[in-house]
Length: 142
Image (tube, rainbow, N blue to C red; front, side, top):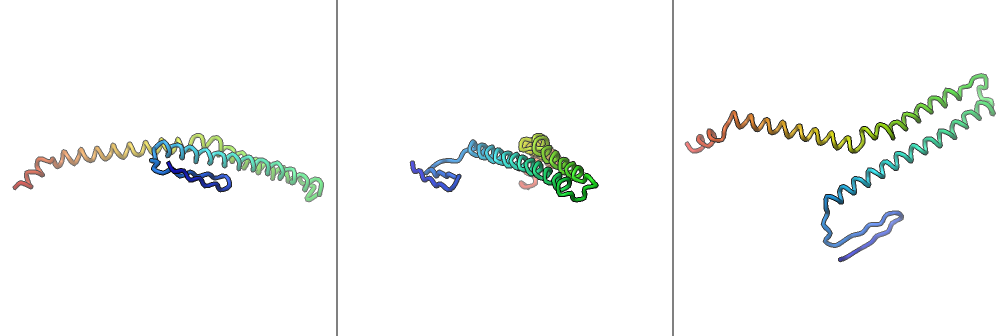
């Protein structure tokens, strides 16, 4: 068996001589990609939260300490809008993804394929009843 290893930062690639690809490898690859995507989504959400907290403090400081348009508490509106956007982001990461994630896409794809197969079989039955093979064979023999 021949093994060749390439190391590049965090990437390690191994090449095996005469290694057959299996469906399990494809499933594992999909699971790994899905996990990496989820990690990125959650990391972005956490970054959004940290920036939201720092930005909120900054807005309060501008309004109260630097006395920029001090007569209005405009920072409350800005923080409220930003908080709403953060909640929408969190909803997309945790709720929407759970209902409309990879599993949902796979089940929808399987349903559509099943419907298409059923429709194809119905059309084939219609064709067989309208144009039976015995009539077609008789015409060829004549």
